[in-house]
Image 1 (cartoon, helix red, strand yellow):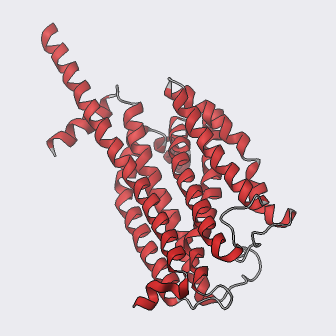
Image 2 (image 1 turned 90 degrees about the vertical axis):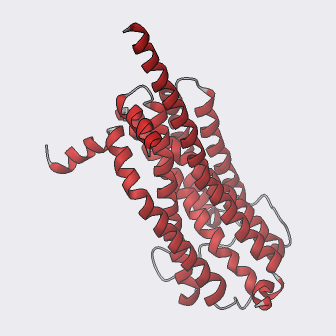
Image 3 (image 1 turned 30 degrees about the vertical axis):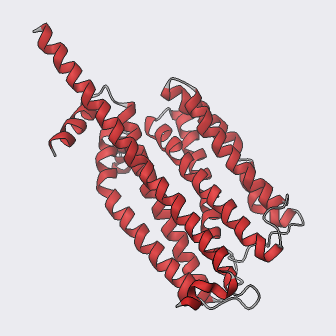
Amino acid sequence: MSEFFHMGGYGGYVWSAMAIFIGVLALDAIAPLLKRRRVLRELRARARRAQKRNEESA
Amino acid sequence: MNPLVLWFHKLGSPPYFYRLAGRLLPWLWGLALIGLVAGLYGGLVLAPADYQQSDAFRIIYVHVPSAWMSLFIYAFMAANGFIALVWRIKLSETLAMAAAPIGAAFTAICLATGSIWGKPMWGTWWTWDARLTSELVLLFLYLGVIGLYHAIEDRRQASRAAAFLALIGIVNLPIVHFSVKWWNTLHQGSTVKLFGPSLIDSRMLWPLLVMALATKFLFAASLLSRARVDLLELEAGKDWARQVALAGERA
């Protein structure tokens, strides 16, 4: 098993390359989820404002 | 109208696309994840060590698929940019702009992992060779498209201006691809060929092809997930967007 992580002496290179690949793509996957939360929050605030205006004018 | 054209028109409608993408997303993420696990297991565990590079060659399984994706996504972005400029289809504007950060991510991965591979094999992290330089230019093109898009206030004008820049940048794609043929480069030529036999053992080749497929699914998933949010934001004043937001509150 330790031989697997050692990667014939190139462990540092191989594993850091894997870490960059997985890390960057994980961030890429998370980014739209965070934006989605923000956009939905704004949309709900907008809907509430519109409702309030309607009630006031009624 | 024939049914295919009709479906294309329907696809261009943001609420229809939003629902369709929402249904596809779990499958795309699932296929991408399965592919990545299988490809990396095949590449890191099952494939034999290279007779020259020993285990360092395994960086290929993240480096080469990322490089392919950096070109593929740019072509996708430019094609959608072209459609956006000519036919003014809102969905194409959104898709083109949603693709840019994903392409930039793959280009950055390609450059970083290439650098990490270059150190033990070439003895240097970086060299101004044609392949490396043109790939760096590709990253700057992506960043230029993203920057221009965010520099303009009006979303639709912004995406059309950025789409135009993306179109001009197409000139760089053949330069990246053929750089290893046109110039004497430290970077090696293509190992995997679309036409003719590949110069690699099949036990090493299949994980690479699985990774290429998995990154395609990953791109599709990230793209649809980004495009959905962007459409919601773009159509914030429309009734369907309000309904999506209020349905999410109840759920």
